[in-house]
Length: 177
Image 1 (cartoon, rainbow, N blue to C red):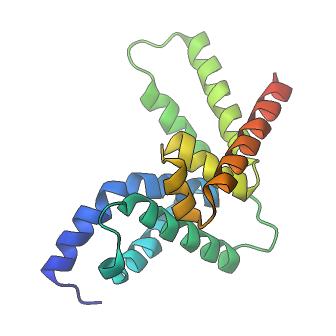
Image 2 (cartoon, rainbow, N blue to C red):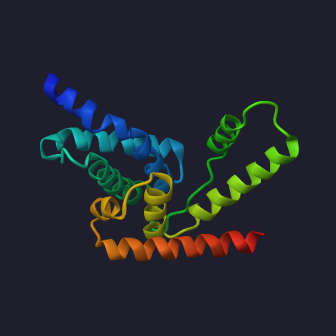
Image 3 (cartoon, rainbow, N blue to C red):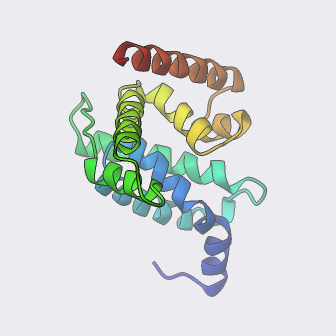
């Protein structure tokens, strides 16, 4: 694929600022950091080829829609019909290490790591439809309209899935306590 300098510049302006969110969504959808990298790379290739039709006002939901669709295509091709998600402990440990600043209190560090692991497990156990809206809203900070545009569903459906996903999280985290 040969790209012009203008296309590279437009890619850097439109797609590059949202790569962290794209990776985060892909990681939650695939359940693996390595698989998420593959999905984001494929999504970037798709985004580059569709850059002429990219919305200039809202590139973030546009890119996340591409990542979402790419992840589902990748999962269908590379995973059996029943998707089994695995924990990515190295990424969890790295995030826990990064979050600590100064001399850590061992008890607080252990509690924080356990809470983070519980939350990650609870989010990972959500059905895909709920997980994607919870991640897009509560982790990536997208608006309801942006999520609706990304997943191709009405805003009411997004709100409903978000409420149900959060209820599942509350129930799951409450049961673990």
